[in-house]
Length: 361
Image 1 (cartoon, rainbow, N blue to C red):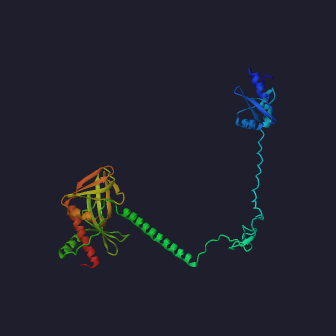
Image 2: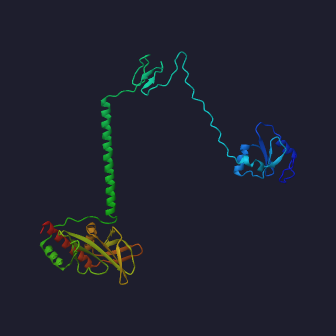
Image 3: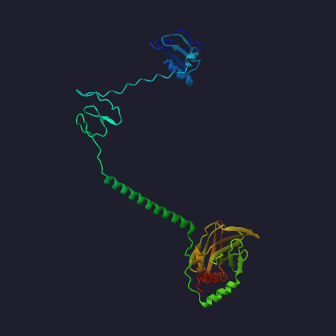
């Protein structure tokens, strides 16, 4: 046995000789990997090992049945050849149905409108209920009359209508709930405008006197006339009502709550302690704010109708404490008697103007 060319020594000659002297019809090879003799491998297996990097050109190999070792550089051309895909294995045709003894062979029908009789194997119309040749009967679908289809058609229409009605009702209830959740803030009294009693003659005289003292301004763009308490001017801590008259002279009330202080509160709601009860007014949106003369100013300005219940309680309360609940800080103060009187007076004027519009004078 020749010594390997790359200088690796002291291999077990008997073991190598025994591994290399195999008998086989296909050429196989042994290789030395990590000082061990591995194999035998076919040329296809060596090609896969070559492509994966498991063997290189310096790897020693020996043909099966030979004692001569060499490097795989001698087989590099053959190992780098692309492995041809093996030809497809031919598949056997499906077995033909073997007819029973004495029966002619059953062939497929030549036309889609024909079928073969299972007894005589002759072509028969697909509409035939029995074979005209041998009399064999065919399985047929049960036929239904016109009433059957009309009945189930009506049932389907009724079911569809019921599903549509229920679906519309569910969607309407859902959107009504969404609208209510958006327009009616939790914690806010939404009693709406009360049914005012008719004013007495004295109340009408008082309303006319108060109306003459209100500050009147007109929006030249919208045509709205605003009636406000004369003292409600400037930046201060105050609660008051004011009246708007549209071009049709229809009155509407608005509620304004203002805060002025050194701290920016970012007010979320207003809590009122009215004698022994607690009421809350929650704004529908974030309050506007400004910074004026080293003080922060935040104000709530919305239609008063949703808050009539709270406003009337404030105007009639003996001790009314108000808390501006902010994200950062709170601010507490007492609602003054002048503010409560102003609420009463503006509601009286609103009733007077509303009565004029409705012809109740």
